[in-house]
Image (tube, rainbow, N blue to C red; front, side, top):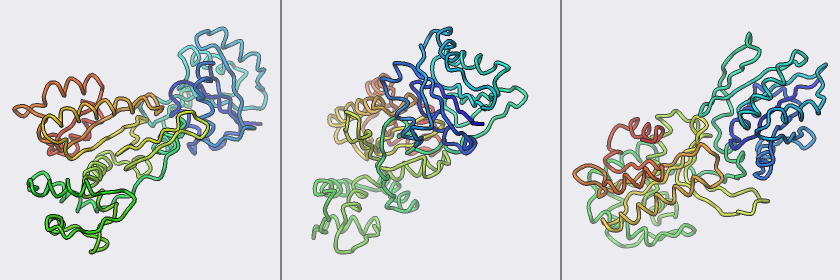
Length: 380
């Protein structure tokens, strides 16, 4: 007797990945992936198998016509599946509507011992919808893992960066920056930004401005004689990324596995596109991937206009970078020159809406944390 999981393959790989890896399906012996020529060209099964680490001997593929109900049923009849000893667990979330209808009909024939499952769009909850007498809903325990999600679309993820500042210190630095930091402080930070090099240590200059800044903000240096590259990154804007990270994680109650800071990804080795990508913040919420970019400032008004346009277009391009279908983006900045009479400039609002990017500036972020986090989630 074998327990066989039948999965529909479509554009969205995440539901299949999370269901396969969930402890509720640990008893599965073999997999049957129902796919199409189009999905084969996009390597959806290969990514799924790699993400879930399924041995080649434990799965097979059935290629069916995407929109031909009779054709799909004929392919299944030709398999001559064992109805005497096997149990079939049928996952209906992927594929086309006709593929889902075909599997529903085929595996509800009296000869089959089958259970059927569905994961609603944008949810981490699984519904067992057949047999009707056994209907139940349960949370997918594996559905909140960022690394697993990315692997489902052919991406390796390097270890995300650990937070440098404590939550309380980073919150205090935010309050200081938006309420007390003056022109001299900003010039000192900009000078440090020009000196900063990721791979080296930065000797603490005798410059009085930097010494005064470090004393003013009570910065807890690891070595009182020098700033490390990581400390310099934190001071020139990394603290803002950490502040945003903390707010999102708290409001959404995300586990550490569902959110990452300064995440680097790379396509699988056998993929033609080997471009490294780096994201300020990535997080997974209700099977939707969120990409967040953060900047403390954008320069003067002319610089801000061009810098904002560039960032919004960059985020729109990121959404198309083999990261799945349900991908949302947001740009958060502490710039204070994007508004006219306390309202975001209509050109900026229009462009953000056209590119489907959530844009939040200093005045938005000074409000309650749960409000700006919910705006990212709702994309309003």
